[in-house]
Amino acid sequence: MSLLPPAPPVPVANRPRRGVVRWAVQRIRAYARGVQAPPAGNAEQTLYGFAQPILGARVLLADPELLKEALYPAGMLAAACALYASLGTETYGHWGIWFKSFYKAFAALAPLPSFFFANHYARLAAMIRWRMGFGACGPREMPWRLLAGRMIRQALIVAVGVAPLLIVARLVPAIGDFVSAAVLGIWSLHWVVADAFDDAQVCLPGESLKAACSRGCVTSWRSTRAARSR
Image: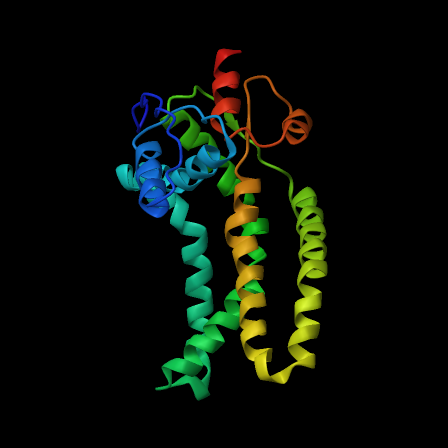
């Protein structure tokens, strides 16, 4: 069973000198029509990559159960942040202050879904892989001790990357608020989106947890097709 039918390969076309944006949009739409192999060429592969979120959205919209499971972690986080922002007495009747409190709480709690919902993402990945027609597999569920250590390592790596931006925000008051908002956005985006992709991994039939962690993510088209042929 597959939620999206296979699509014929998109013919390779040279990039025109004029109307590049229109050409790129047409290529993305063509790649978003269905499941197909990655094309050759850096430019085509870039457009192919932009089309993958559209394919993912189509899969979720085609299956209400998958959509609910995908939105559950972010929805729980947003609900907790909204509750925190609403409990503040200074936010009553001031939507700007309420949103600022919500945004800061969201950034502060952003790493938690990668810990509490990591195995949920793994089960979701296994479900989607089966629904896409790539064969049966199991979720790569990890014990809490490994998840805690992994979250701490990821937090340190991201913190090292955003630390220079925070220093700039303190040294340049004129743009400090904008830089701080951008840093919070990058921090939240990493945990809610990028790290969730890292959690969404599966174990192939007969594969141990250690082997699955060593193999890495198998959600790309080539990896899933290769796994299906084994």
